[in-house]
Length: 311
Image (cartoon, rainbow, N blue to C red; front, side):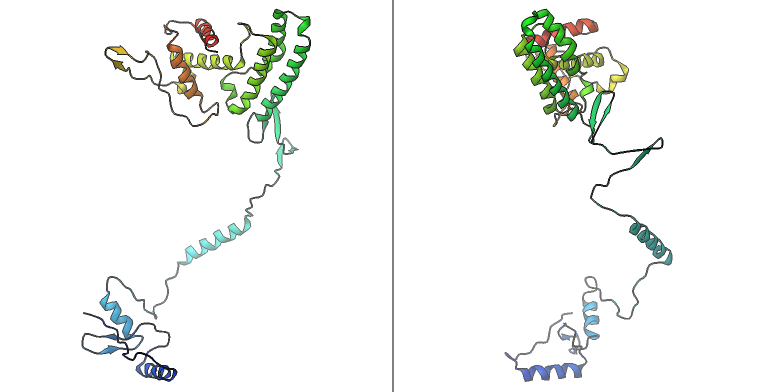
């Protein structure tokens, strides 16, 4: 069944012809708002009215076009769903959602706590983002002042006295365990390392007074020793699998006990701990052997000497 539109062969039409055409359309039953041109039926007749043309198209495009019945009522929701929607709408109107920060009012034991940007807990300062940035900046500032005082009195003391005074007053405030700096970023720890390097330049170096960075690395390797060798239960989540041995012409290209180094795309101390310490552990195995039977004290001495040679 083919459909052909009935078009006029007249090349142009004037205003009078347009008015006459409207009259003819009204006489044929066409609607003014109908944009469908006249269609030819299979029997040779022409569909002009706004009612015949949609039915003819619907019968021709049965699977591609659906013409709704204008007399059919629109579908409505059940009354229970309407009530539920009204309830949700009324509850949403009671909420006041805003992107601006509103000061919180916290009550603790009958006292109202005022919001603060920083709070000090057990000597450690936390900011509103739960980071150690302000705490490390304060430590670096205090260590800088103490180093300046120590430098002024250095001509009165010998090397041994300077070392004891530094360990008692300055290094103790800058030393923390490797895992204790879990929330510290690398750029913040650089502040402390700079003050420690200044001490190295001003007061000289000794084997008993190494850098804080080396001591942090030694503590991190000590944790890995407890995990990989001593099998401490509460540190088991940090345990890493060993690499497969790689052989070339009968020679092993990897040392026994090397660990798989996971990928890490951050310098956040807590998140890249396993990545960095696994790399240090693999480098340590090239210089230190027989870790299975070593005690914790022997391991720390070996690691300390190895880090001094590396640094």
